[in-house]
Length: 220
Length: 220
DNA sequence: GCTGCAATTAACTACCTAGTGAGTTAAGCC
DNA sequence: GGCTTAACTCACTAGGTAGTTAATTGCAGC
Image (cartoon, rainbow over all chains, first blue to last red; front, side):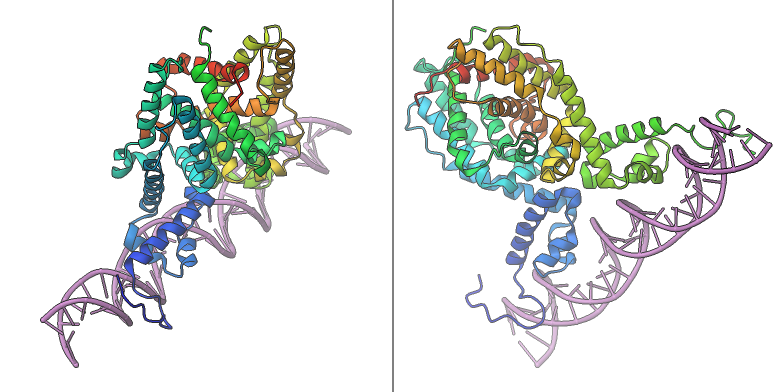
């Protein structure tokens, strides 16, 4: 908490541990998201924020630990956003649709997060698994979905045999695929899943899909 | 000379261009799927089939071209399998469910393909885009879905405003996510999306979801 | 059995890359 | 001002890494 930052000195950066650490984390997030874990270069991260590679090892210990810190930070951001979910004042169908749309918007707004998750899956979630903090965070979204499902079933509008985690998977699958696989899908089928003028269409499609499932006929 | 080496004509593998090329492609597929494009090692691919790195450059020119060849080969395999789709003798609802289930089964049976597609998306589909052959292959699945949709609408059972490509995206999203993201999803929500004893449940869920969407109420 | 060429081998190059050893400088404290 | 230490810099290592040069060998056609 430096009250006054004197103007930058000619040689070397100002000494500000918190800022340096935060900058490393931010640029590392971009680099890992862009290049993948193996493709990211520690030197490049250092160069982009005008520090040295040595500082990265000073603060994070290793490339692996840096990547783990990046993932932890990214997931913490998501969970924080989920805390602000406010859909339970709606009727169950509207609440689920709204929640799905918020997931949809979130994925679209954070493509780098999507890339990080894809990359972490290529590595079979080894960093997340090793992380102390990520697993402990429980997901507000799951709890919200659980309560909406209970209410919807109590009212008799939801007929599907599904729990909150699997419904979350269904919603995430649609939102994630649309962003993560847009490049290959676009190349193969000549359709841009993230085109601005189709955005509302897909948002509605998602809600219709989830509600179609929850309220549909399940006799076979 | 090499009295110590009893079998084989002492030094070197047998000369068989087709076999060598095929082996390179097969092992390269595994390596790229496991390690990602940047993480894969040309030396390692060569070592695993007891040839030299030079042969890889002899047959494929560069690491990038090798990866492109791997993608081309993988996609060709898929399209070939799609040729054998035989669902149009069923009524539209059953046909769509069956087709979705075949996609589901295919994704589950080919996790390495899923990984390759994830990896190629990290690279923004640059290799697929550069490929001469992949784009030309048109997708039998899209055409089959298109005909089923037409028939379903003609019969009045399908009400959703969707075309074949977007419906294919919906089905793929569910199947792809379940395999591709199973590691992070499992670590975060303690649920194994690919557990054998939940397989039928998810298969049914997919069909219910797609048919719930196609036959559901779309008034909002 | 010789010859031309495709297939294969081995030994390189030139650069990259994660990680480190060890010293230097600024800031807070007395 | 002098001391302490966190924050920072610089130069280095040791092993990897894609790609190459050039020589060799087996096989098909003659």
